[in-house]
Length: 581
Image 1 (cartoon, rainbow, N blue to C red):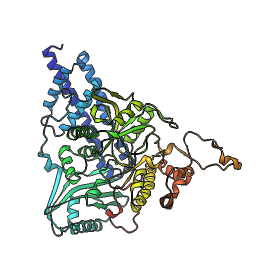
Image 2: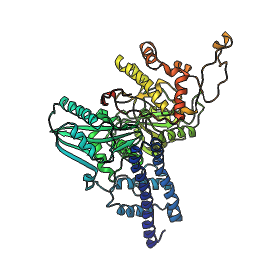
Image 3: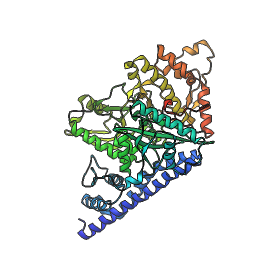
Image 4: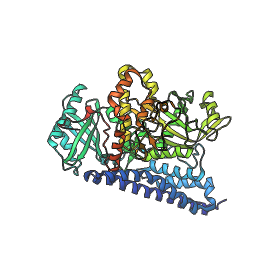
């Protein structure tokens, strides 16, 4: 047993060491985030991409560092949970006046889970729920700017832009301001709210991602509230307003779970998240934290929401998800929840030749990569513990047979050692069977667009099958099966060699040599799974996917350093501009 005096000393030192590590992480996070402003102004897109990847690595590096430090500091007492309970108490006291204390609590949890590999949760050494209620504070006035009694005209747009004095070199500010104001006026008239804007409130810092920057805010007219985002691009001829987003669905797409994180400089994340939640009420709090780069705290919020759901909906049980059986993953969900859980099988069906480690590396690749609005974000969880009654008999049988090394099933509990948690989407093959003709045609066209968006972002899906893609609530086609995914530039796209004799075409095996990374686009036609009108539609819009030239030319552009801007909004949102591409 640790003597009382030493115990208090160790608790204080441990708490301070963890907070110091968190402070270092936050300082590095802010430094990279704030650099986005100058990178956008200077059009340094490659540096922006490097910074995005570097920022994603910071959290793991910080936890790696504090794990080593705290083990050395505590020595043999490091496994004493009573000591860790005191460390948590001392740590909580240090957070009282912090504006980012919810993030700091999650960092503490990450540290203890590294030390103990905690199964389920342990409230004595983790912040299962926050120690604090976090009401809006003084930071609200610093975070937002407000204009009142404004007409929806060009002068209003220029007043908004004036809040960002570093946005100086516009291509044609007068034209863009008139066009943007026109879109706002049209939206107000459609909602029967013409006339003056009572208030427009917007975040003082821009949201940066890739080649784009966004002003995010809210318009109030009477009892009507309208979310608004002004999308900016920086072309060689100057900055321009490219689009104005003016409803919840349009704004939801840039904040989608298929998008990479924004870089937005904020000291008090809580207030920003509450503001974003008012604009996007259908978004989970977890998704909003993840969208602005705090993915670990997003996981914390996601887990808390899951516990709340299980507590409130005690009759909602996990069951096998609809769709074709996965050869690599067991997928399950609760009918009344919009999350799916994916467990890697103990062994994979033929012809899969991958390994568990390789599958996990694919998910790591997706986490670090630009998701281009087409790759579903997956959160990795370890040592989840559920009540045994939460699982259907059918699912339990499947877990026993297919994931015995990952799942421990006891009489009253089920422990999942590793799982990926994603937002639920409708598998594309099921969607096409259920959809009307117009919806099906739109999905098929967007399926081809999804494959092309992935290609230009240097991703080749591997398995181009309908069942590996899904359709979101807003009708966008996304990819979620990563076990065959790879970088496009690692593929060798070839034309099928002509047969030397007629019998070659009828042979069970190829008459030509096939290397591991060889891809024959002509063969992809056989994997579409489409027929009739839908096949004709796909060929009309995307026949180039079956030609070697498309893939090789895309590879050449990637190797030349060309970065595409994949617009996270529809054409209807964009400013009319002559000669626009």
